[in-house]
Length: 421
Image 1: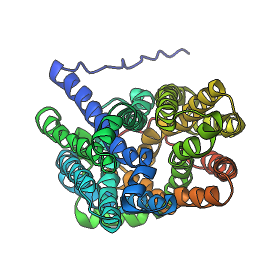
Image 2: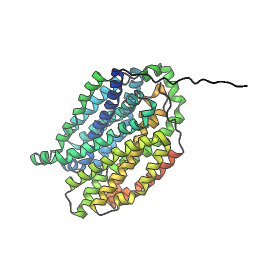
Image 3: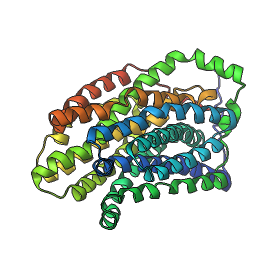
Image 4: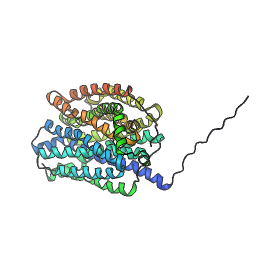
């Protein structure tokens, strides 16, 4: 007895030129939004000493302005994330871009440390809202098979923003410093207001996500879904706590380590060489995010991330333990390749772990709760670094963080390729 089976052909939908353009624009808006957000954040990191000198404050005092930004980000994730689930992704994204740009400009006008600290806290609200809304809009607009590599591209807007901040510190800041020795830093914050213009691009060129239309729900069901997924949310928050500590622990105080210890030892200009090393490390970050993001499409999200974290752990001695300029460049490049390689998987990974009806709020809020829980990493490293050395502070703090991070990723869930909408 024989039987014949016929296979149903897989029909690939043919997209119009307008639909293809909308996909590109959605990804571009998410990428540029995160780029500008990171630029505005890392301008402070690059000029921590300079701003502290203007306000008459120590490095440790100024590190609290970084902590304030990180700690306020969950508030933005709640406000803009819930708006994104209720009213669509576009409007909250546009409002967010304008809000954090205005806070950046006002930071440049701050008359004293207290005002500056409050404005950086408000900036953190804007920074906390952008990632979740921008990532959900971008990843809901592309096919599942592209999520890994586009996740890496999207996340590395952060590295590009850091690179641009370092470039502005290297190329633009010296000009303003010569003209206004004590207040030259303020002009870079004024430049940070330009991202508001991206809101016009989103309004004109980006359409609302179809996945949002299919997944939207009423508030009663929305609340039920939130409380019904608390266990998944708790895992994602812990994951993001260690991932944020992994990133900010290797980035925020690294320029201070270079300028205070390594470049002094090598007798090199701190502004010039800390900028160049940072820029080169961010080139590694961009490449790492895209490469590991693509690898995650083949070997899975968790395996790709754990591989990057393990390799980063092995690189710690090369990252902060060498005293030759060429090896410093190599260590910075490889460390950020691995750090942002693991991070390049995150947008796809935690959006896939999130319920469709909650995708504007759920991944972004989990991310920012992780930010809140790890927001003291910079201040901790600064405190230990001032008492002992920054090389020892960065080494031991990151060794602990990386080991914990790898374990949390490995024993967690994965929903690679899940259908959106």
